[in-house]
Image 1: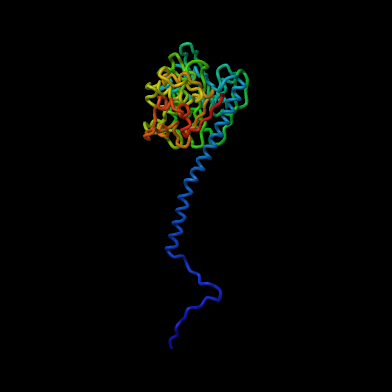
Image 2: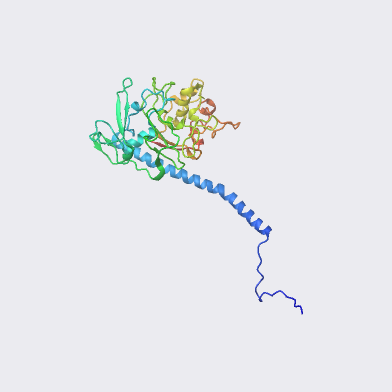
Length: 361
């Protein structure tokens, strides 16, 4: 005798459970994908702002240390006098042994001694000898990177460190180009931004003269109040920072490596470009045929006594790809009349994503 099985009815008041259909699953996945697509750009902007804020904080703390150093000694920090560090260099293709930022860190944090210091013999580290150049006397300094942070020794007295970096703010910059006699295992660590690129530092070297050198060779008079020499170890790198960005790329590289600006070429063009980035917008010479593009920069006034520059999220110092003309082409000449005489002229620095802190104004 055959029995027919009948489905068991669900208890009263309880619906029959069933799974999602394939169409429903695809719809849910699509919605999730859409939400992710909408949120990722916003998340990226939040992260970028966070890194920019962190970098600003690092640079502001370093600037406070520079100001405290000035209050104590009447000068901005450099363990090796600028005239010694840059002596005999052309200011364009010849790199100093240390960048200006590294030199400042040694002055602020300690880690160096000169032969007249009482503990020189037992200080340890590496000796660097700078020969006499013209009227600039020979100079010797011993650098012990392991003792950076113990504080500088100056004028016969030991001081507490003026600056104490935190976390990843302090380390050797990847891809830095080195001057003669420097190896990566003895190089002074750098001040790093939140993207892992070195923060550049440049300070006024002279209180008189043109804003930047007028000549292709920085050793020739008239020298500028500011020189690019202390930046060269960073801006001439073909693979700088954690991401390894090429500062020398002809299209996206640093405008500080331009070949033509303001009717000049070569090193003079690069000096003028640097001057355009640091000069005061409110003190621009009036337009007119009697005033040349280059003269407006040379006669300009700097916005401060020192500058700190992070290349920002793109990792390039003032990338020429970021400032474009009306035709959408990258601008390599930021000195010529096309940019110099319009309201954006000296304010062109604001069009880059670089993080800039000015001090000593």
